[in-house]
Amino acid sequence: MSEVKLEDIVSLCKRRGFIYQGSEIYGGMAGMYDYGPLGVELLNNLKRAWWKEHVYDRDDFYGLDSAIFKEPKVWDASGHTSGFADPLAECKKCNTRIRVDKELENIGVRADEKMSEQQLQKLFDENRDKLKCPKCGAKDFGPVRMFNLLVKTNMGDFSGDIEAAPVYLPGEACQGIYLNFKNVVDTTPAKIPFGIAQIGKAFRNEISPRNFIFRTREMEQADTQYFVPPHQNKERYEKIKQDRLDWYAKMGIRQENLRLKQHENLVFYAADAWDIEYNYPSLGFDELEGVHDRTDYDLTQHSKFSGTDLSYTDPTSGEKYIPWILETSVGMGRMFLAFISDAYTEDEIGGEKRVVLKLPKHLAPVKVSVSPLLKNKPELVEKAREVYTMLKKEFGTVMWDDNGNIGKRYRRQDEIGTPYCVVIDFETLEGDTKGTVTVRDRDTTEQKRVKITELISRLSGEFALSQD
Ligand code: ATP
Image (cartoon, rainbow, N blue to C red; front, side, top):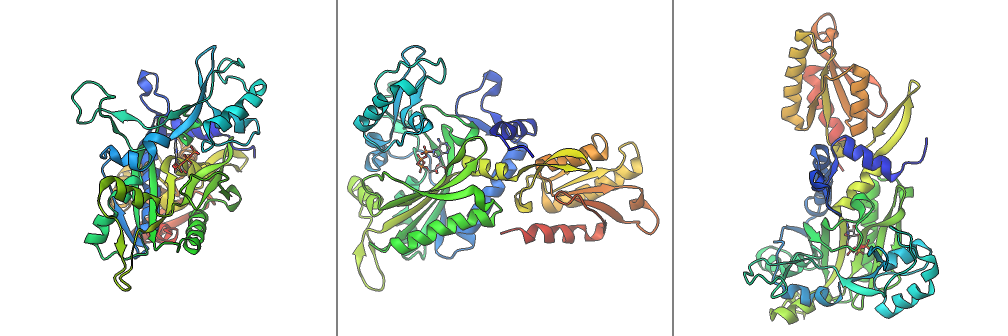
């Protein structure tokens, strides 16, 4: 089968209602996407699976959902107002802005956004003859300058001047966790070592949002922050890194599409940083999730800037210290893209090509489809409606599908990853097989007759099996 391309995934997402371009009827807005009826189900299933792993299956983790808007000093303390910047250069001919480190990487030059402006300028100048404007092809760029990615708002400011006292949208969701560290310690049984998990929105003025939902300006980040005593970071960090990698494999992502990559340039406070990379169609290996050893930087900074002491006193030893933090952070869009790409399969059934989304069953946006064999036979439709209502009550995401012939319905359900198609036929209504339906399996295409009275227990068993 041919290699899957990003455009195959984009096309499936649009065609079947997984993802739409944001503000599409107005011509679209760069870096914004909306999740459609099937997309929101897959996204929620991924969030649930992630939450289960980090909150429900652990007794040393606490959940959180912090406000998007934060006191602006938070972003001074975190270093975002001064240092959260990407290198930009502008094409002198058509004014297109490029992200310098990414364009250098594209031509095989090692660069990243953590290098200084001078370092990047030097690399840029050395390679000017190889760097073309992606829009007009000109090789005439202005100087490299660092562009701050924080998005400003006038929340609560009525002066009419957005620069007067900007309140920022979060550049990363995790800051809400640091702000609530003390609250969680004071109001729960949490004792170090423990973690806080949150899925929250973040916004970045990305210079060139691209590659579908891989790089967007609005994103959702699933973060864990694990608090440990000073210098007890190394061993725990290795375990967290491995656990996160293993989680993707456990969730069905193919091993050969995952790898770990260590950062070459660290921000000044970090002790270590690795990316879990996924082999995205057309893009190759790129960052899916970051795993960062952040030392005591975050709580030290917030203690300093807020004037609130965020140190922790060990209840047994009485030792007082600022905890060190181990972080994992994954964009839900990148996670979505990895799962849908990994599941996307083209195969052949009886000489006919099909696209099938081989998602783990508990992640599938629609769990079961129900069809009457023929839609013009009222007795079949009536029975099918009964079965549909029963299954919908149990599983929620059940689809009624009576459009086209049965083969077409199967293809349609395969394409959206529905694990089971239930068909009500004449054998359901009479003879030895009365009270049974056909259940067709997405992956094997095998069909079995199952008693209606056993449908829920048989199907629940299947979904539960792949629950973790
Ligand atoms: P990149 O190098 O790709 O810009 P980053 O290193 O700046 O990413 P982090 O700040 O570590 O990313 O953010 C944690 C996670 O958030 C990333 O691993 C990624 O999954 C996600 N993420 C970051 N920026 C974006 C974006 N613009 N669009 C979608 N997801 C993003």
